[in-house]
Amino acid sequence: MQEIKCRVALSLGGGFEGTPAKVWGTKKYNSKTDKDKPCVFFGLYGLPDFYELWRHRGKKWILWCGSDIRNFINGYWLENGGGIKLCPKGLAKWINQNCENWVENEVEQRMLAGHGITAKVCPSFLGNVEKFEITYKPAEKPKVYASVSGDDFKLYGWDTIERIVGRVPEVDFYLYGSKNWKTKHKNVIIRGRVSKKIMNKETEKMQAGFRPVEFDGCSEIIVKAILRGQYVISRIAYPFCPAYQNDDELIFQLKNLSQKSFPNWRAWFWFSNNLNKFPWTPQICKK
Image 1 (cartoon, rainbow, N blue to C red):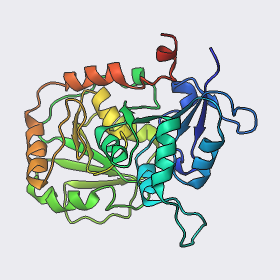
Image 2 (cartoon, rainbow, N blue to C red):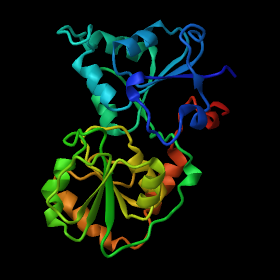
Image 3 (tube, rainbow, N blue to C red):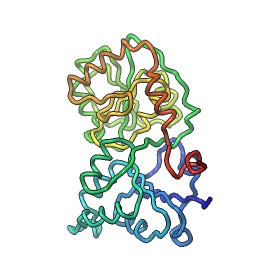
Image 4 (cartoon, rainbow, N blue to C red):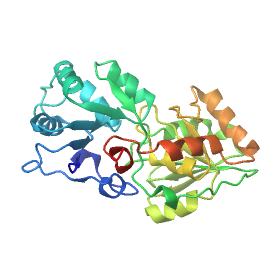
């Protein structure tokens, strides 16, 4: 079987639990030597990413990440800081004809479909699944955790937390990623930016992962919570984890956490059997 390569978009950055090489078994892409080899393009954020995709002559898979879909639909900049953008319509037609597209949830799938790109759905997790054991225990005062990248608080829904937290004093909210958020509520604990090891250790004892983001890939917050048997409160629906649509539904889910006597086994079973089931991963390639 031919070796499968992976090109990770520079804009994607790091911060994952692991790497594509460790989890998917792919090798780093070299644009000079690997143009004819099958390759996963992980993220398609801008024109340089699309150009490498277009130049590639081998099998092409794309795993869209969330915000790269927004970039694509809005049109790639033709020049840095300039006013010229490329219309995505022609690019979408070429991508749909020449690439196999994958996304991590149905929200992403519908967004691409609206612009002419057909995509399959499968959640990914660049971590060791066996490292995350069932740790869920019920609590009279549940703890939920959320995160932010940089200080983009609105995008990551922290304004939602501040808006509704006064209506759920029976729940504690632990916020990771930045110390720059200001809160007026005692049940909001600003943890700031800590190491992944510390965050994993702290959050494994909590009751729910919280992801109030309207358009997103399948966040590690979601996957880690499910692998621990915890509950997920998300703006985006996942199998056995229904989304909330408004503040009242969100508050209902938060208040209902104290009634959860057992781990979320159904979500755990589904994710344990469906994570990383891509055509480029070893367990699929060998079939």
